[in-house]
Image (cartoon, helix red, strand yellow):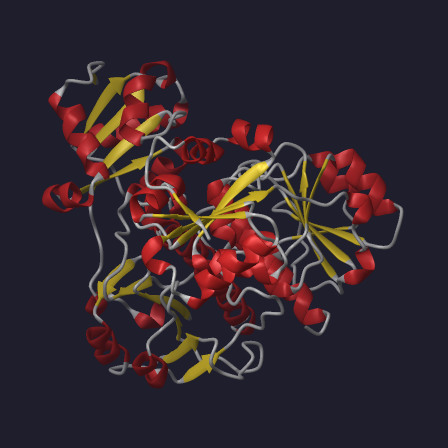
Length: 266
Length: 266
């Protein structure tokens, strides 16, 4: 039987609200996700929250019931609350019916099985949480083996990244590594490193891509540094006919990933 | 000689800050853009601000100087200010060196020349300003004739949309119309209406697209209504291998647009 909390001053509510801040997420090893679609996606991927907050008037919804039951069965706590508290927790005027607090997770490079997928996404110094979430959605759609985040990057467990991923954070493995660690791991097995660049004449539609293909996208503002470009087995360019000088990083990653997927017969 | 303003209480500063709000934008017919890259893009596209705010310590930057001169030559006013005020105007902790206040613009359907481009982007009930800006960047990159926004949609002149467009708002014509007005205009001339859909078996790589191709993207959460799908000459689907059920709308638009661009020989 879920307990009820309707007071902003409740210590658990205060604690959960602080998870909007990166430092508190790292201290607690917990993060926030919101909305029935994302939490259901998580449940189907086998991820259950430590705390599940749901609006009292949504308790009869079958997907909310399924979340409450699964959370309690896994040892987590379901908490009945109201729209005001959910709004406070999610930071949105129109909160969804549920907010979940999950343990952070992740995978080490050494635990990735590169033979499990023909496309892998790699992003270096990714800064925008919306781009990170969007790239995860693309990774899910193209069946990527995972997303590898290099060097200093935005937190994949930020509220904005989780929201933009629409649940793909729970379905696409995310590894975080330094460039050096990645390079050593990459070269210890098969894999073609393909960099997206503005400084090349190779059209992205021309090459034959070898699986597993590792697609490297550079920092939004600066692109990738020269030493990374030099390490790539192939640099390719998406043609741009316009006046502005680049596509959005998440968009470029997707256009490229679908090109590779098409070649690999997906 | 630019005047200086360094007081938050200055009436112009107060007035400009209010442009972050849609109602005030519509009342004034003005909107905000920020950052040297975007304002320079605008200048090169022939759009100059009514008011240009620049940080005093950036006044020697050649691009800032070019903006100040062009703004004054066009009858606008350049105002020297400081980082605190720029931060207040832009709503960012780290503001760029410049903020501009521009008259809103737009183009009527009847003024679009459909023979001027082989790809046109059409979005119905687009809700997210980041998606709108990102679609404009894609439109710029693929050489789209313009973006046509149907029915009730997010304001293309919102601070977030302008920022996400990275200047493409100034280079890609944007028309706003009802579905009915669009349908009548479309059918009064040549044009293939291609809808992105999850409810079709046609892979987006299979068809031959006829120029001018009008790519219709549906609302982020609901997709397009049945009556729009029924009007499309072709419905196509981007394959999705994953567990989540859809790509981001701006990403799907871009994958599709590059497929068409490739066929048209771009």
